[in-house]
Image 1 (cartoon, rainbow over the protein chains, first blue to last red):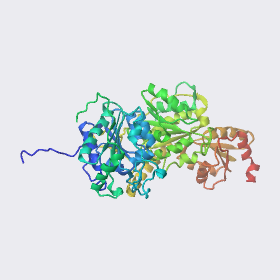
Image 2 (image 1 turned 45 degrees about the vertical axis):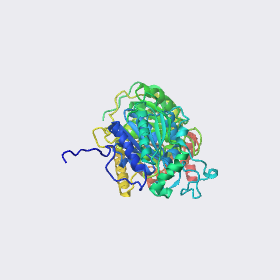
Image 3 (image 1 turned 45 degrees about the horizontal axis):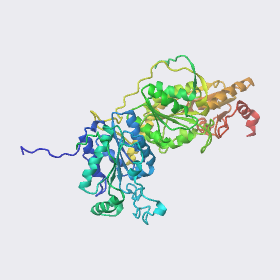
Image 4 (image 1 turned 120 degrees about the vertical axis):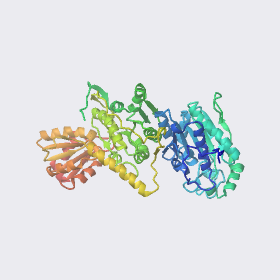
Length: 255
Length: 358
């Protein structure tokens, strides 16, 4: 054992604890990705994270950084209050699609328009998971939810919102991208994009947001594997996974 | 504690006195949204705060503004917002979160006539909202200034109380107090330093991470938080309970009870009634919560009747009745919708024949 060496450790920015997420949920992996980025950029001791109301409401139990639990949808406003009073802090919000794209649409649009120097991790799984699978603004046409038992109908519930494309109409934001948790290949891509969303704040003093397409096997009524396959075939067809607003070219891109 | 030191007086507008009181106390962050009749506050702060190294930011709504306050307070700042009645309704959720998360902040309500969109005239119809604010068990200190000087003093005082109680404190003004000009003496001494805030979320350098939260899934835990918040409120309440009396000591015929603008009118009514031979006096609660219940009960032993005068349909009168517990009759005189009872209306309403006709 004399030549044994540590080659892999959990991120310092994540508490070593059980998570409450359902089996097959991608939140846990995404938490880890975010924590790895915070570690790699050396930001753990200056970071303040803001949790949403939704499945990630308990994120303050998981991220080993200073954490604030916000009212439903208001995380970008809370983040603004932290950042404006403590510009030396790195501030991120972690929000679901109910939190960000439904009740909190006003706060995210204006934070983006102000180019508020915060990083937003926006998890889009197309349902309200915490409250048992109700329809979200991002639920796809035809997709069933506990409050859309016939599937989403455009003439009744309207169309799903493409948040990143909408924010891309604003002059303010520094970095906007969409990523996916559908496979290891996409998760690596998501990490590259999320890293840029942090650099948008730390290097460019601006607003960075990544919409991360995620699965919800529990409320989609699928096995974890089926859910990931459905993401690739269906979710990612409606929500293009790409970089919409790249970082300004001076950005140091190293892994 | 040493006596406050004041400088030379100058003519100040109420809304600006609120700003200067906040800045004196060390407030350097303001987040707010326009609404009449308090617009001079964000306007004044937008140019004044940068002069003292602070930050003013206009929120996109009252919801955003109160949550910006929440974030700044969580990171340890002395921070405030102001609004007027309908805007305070929108902020109420955030104020409940501030209280449950044990975060200090100062909120000023420059009230207007209501309900609904109402009007921009002075009213006291937010008394119940102020003193019973928010969902959940909400013990919150509420101050009721009645002059431009008190707007200045109470706003500064509110920051001390908020830090001591680790809770939001509400200053209940109104359209007249905010808009009127009176001589005001600014403080020339230094405020007590803000307490250390080891709980603040501002980066966990050299310590374990902090969490600011109002979610307690286990009812036992929620109860213990509520009891802790309540205990802190009770402790600070003991020290901050305050009222003013105006010829109340020998007011054996009639004790008027009023706060804020209506108390100013009542002072004149007392002079009028005294000139006519009625032994009248006034008790003015300065803290609406805590309420000067014990003093009212004591005065009720020696006066024939109490009349509560408010710019609403009768809200504080309930608290007076609870305090007096039937020791003497408690009646109500008021106007609503943004109207102010005049001295004549009060004097006429409390005349013996009006009383016996009830």
